[in-house]
Length: 155
Image (cartoon, one colour):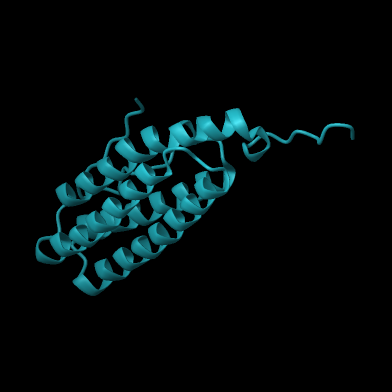
């Protein structure tokens, strides 16, 4: 499993996208990168001890980006008739609940530990595991949806 370190020190954040995190579906990978950017902004805001209104702004951006991403992902899984869509959808619902909990914890006591927990759940458990499972399903059943640029047969 891929390792990604998160720290809460005073230096610039360490939540950085690495191309090895990609699942092979460009639109989804780009959304994951955007979520990383939001997490990095929150990490930096916590590290700088910025006022709540600034941190809250970054959290709202993350929440909206996450909601959009999860809706896109669920639509894709519905289109390809992914067999584990119910499980994946339930995991998404759990992520949205954890996002609300993260906001509450950061409002009470901004700390890198709260962010690390959310990041590990979303990224390590979800993206590097569940998302890669559906990507493998799509690659096997719908290879043209993956990052490659294959020409249509007969052209």
